Amino acid sequence: MHSSMLVFEHDQCRLPALDPDRTLRIGLKFLPGSWLLPLAVAAAVAVLAIASQLFTAAPSLPPAPPPSPPHTPSQSMPTPHRPSSGSPVLPSAPLTSTAPPTASAAAAAMKYSTPLVIEPRGDHKATIILSHGLGDSGHGWIDFARIISNEIPEAKWILPHAPDRPVSINGGMSMPAWYDITQLGPGPEDEAGYIESKRYIEQLARAHAPNGDLKRTVLAGFSQGGALSTYIALTSEIEYGALVVLSAYMPLSSRITEPSPANKNIPLLMGHGTSDNVIPFSRAKQSFDRLQEIGMKNSTFKVYPGMGHSMCNTEMLDVRDFLLEHIRSK
Image (tube, rainbow, N blue to C red; front, side, top):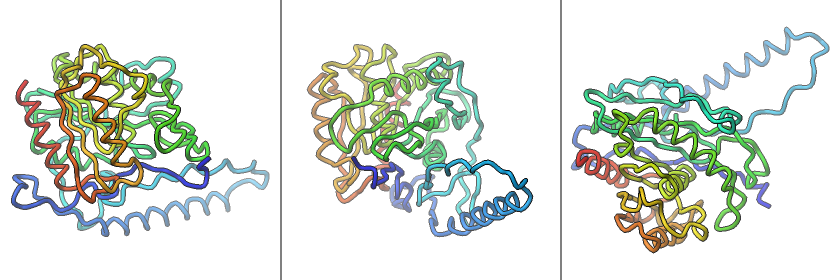
């Protein structure tokens, strides 16, 4: 139906300059324009590599496969693999990759790649699993996680990557997605996709819980990743420590009539911008009201006037404060 309009859920302004009055030790200034040069260099290298293959290939080459779907990186932050000259020095939290535990047959079929991991500094007291939006990857949130990790060094961050799958709203194009989306707004939902991704995220939660204590694990997500995190909290037998839902909505809102007893009282922070043109503010507010209606009373809804489908400075600080409160109160 919407094959002519590609929908991506990248955050377009995730890391603005922070308010110096509330910055504490964060104090970084980001220069999005400086990322253009390394992108141009990478593109030139790719073109030369393709040209070299064309000139050296045998004359009876088979037809080339179709190009990979476009995956536009978030415009406001570089990935950690190609830092641009003049970009800020990130806090020195160690970054490693940790293979997920043995996946189920369904999860293995989706070819989940190794998540990014930011190790804690000092005693490991909490784990935060942050799931990205449609068409993005864990790399899109690495700078945000590293900044907050500088404030909460005792937390381990897990940044998983959704597998590629056909997305109906984008004409069946294959791209990173936690589940299929058939339309913008309410309608049929891919419950099988939710269940499959939930299984994978919960395997990560069990593998990375501090001392095996899953109550010290925070579920978080942006857009599609936020909806997935909400679904997990609503349906899981695991008791989680907190839930952070950014620019997202409640999935299966007409079918889920009560939360899992394990997470009925989970602390929830839900944030949304009034100018979001991907997931309208009205849908987010209806989702929050529905969550309260079915019994999730320990919840807070933060409104960000003028913010689109993104994260602003104020929201980032609100997330930091929420995490500090609920991680250090355990």
